[in-house]
Length: 385
Ligand SMILES: Cc1ncc(COP(=O)(O)O)c(C=O)c1O
Image (tube, rainbow, N blue to C red; front, side, top):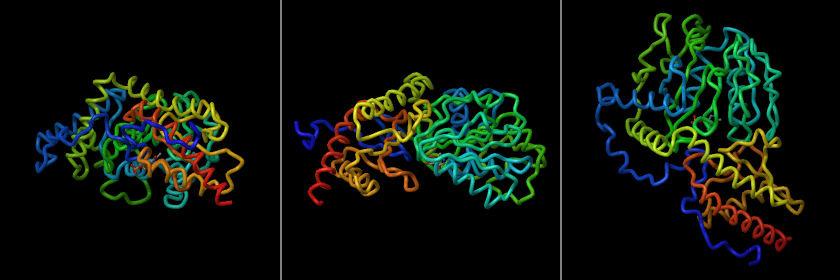
């Protein structure tokens, strides 16, 4: 076979987008038939579904019994901003970023909230030294940098007896990576990532210390209704029992319940993590045996097992951005990989979602196509020159 001959096999499911991510294996809309459509989310049928979503989250993620879990508006962004707007300002903050989404939270705090904050950043492919941060401040960080494919390897650097709060955007980590709950006071995610759910709803997990902050601190700025978690200085407990602030989509809730059921059936959190690990390993092994493609994450301990970001390293490539886009286009045109271009603010390359809903056989089937597209594009470039 020449390098530009097309591989024989194709991924059965070419959906490798980093969000919304592939639905659970075998998904069909019929699976949502039990959604209480046309009913109030405050009717007992709706409330039960929302409570099931909260308790299912606790069970599958292993969230401690004394942590609150709420379903909130505006997806992961809503959950992160609700936490920052409600809790920050009580003490100094440390804003940590090593890719686009973390950088967005820095902008929120520095340019919008304008509170006293240190900003600690690292370039794409790297991570900051989590042990060097001041945990007497409130530390805001992203567990898995979706746009750089760099993740926090573990929570060892975070002291259990910190004075500040840790606010962690874990949207592309939750369910696929271990989250050390005793090191985290606020954890946010949305259903559209590792669980292959729908966007628009966020999940906000609060430690007892985060609740204490909410009950004992009132920010200097006004809070819109969709951010308000307290009433008369007390936590609005209803939010954390399924009485959402505004109207959720019961179709999305049903879809999440179906995904949680799938997770339980395959073996829970361990199985979800093992699936993402196996998927990412296929890509890592592929890169290891090629000298023209590499993981964007420099330190193997920080390599994401969900949003795997790759860069082309061949010296013959003259315009990295155009080359990566052309490879992505070839993959898409062949119907073997959809939405695998690097994020718009990230270095040029490919980003292959390897989260738990993706089948390892599909990642395996994709690798020869990347090889094919790379060589086909190099040839095309050489012919054009
Ligand atoms: C790390 C991170 N934070 C925040 C977001 C925004 O999520 P959403 O669009 O669900 O609000 C994303 C989406 O990709 C993300 O990857």
